[in-house]
Image 1 (tube, rainbow, N blue to C red):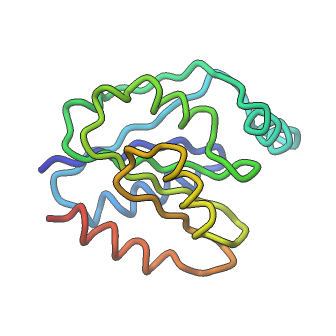
Image 2 (spheres, one colour):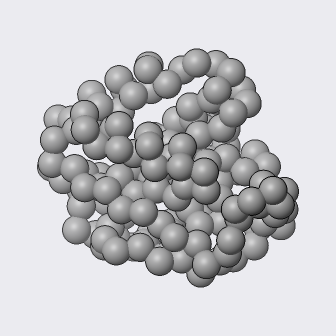
Length: 152
């Protein structure tokens, strides 16, 4: 079984998380999603939130084809209660090639169940959705669940 961890990261948190998970999984590759919009700097955070709230489309680039893998773990930050435009665009572009999609959202707030449920309901073909939050300190539990599920 082959795994692909694909991620979008504005600040480096999701990139670091993807590296941590890939070290725990055998037969795993990683791929970064790049957005054509610049969300860095002081104005990057409010600009990112506005892009999510307005459901703006974006142009993205990445290297690996999802249809070449059995499992895709998409890691994305939470922006304004939802996933990033880059992650939404990735699902839209790769939807036909997705065999098993798992989504891991990352945010500094709390209520991980609500965020994970919202994502899973939006993309009903998603096998499982999680949210790691800074306030709930649930990273270790979720990492363990992911590695058990995808490490087979």
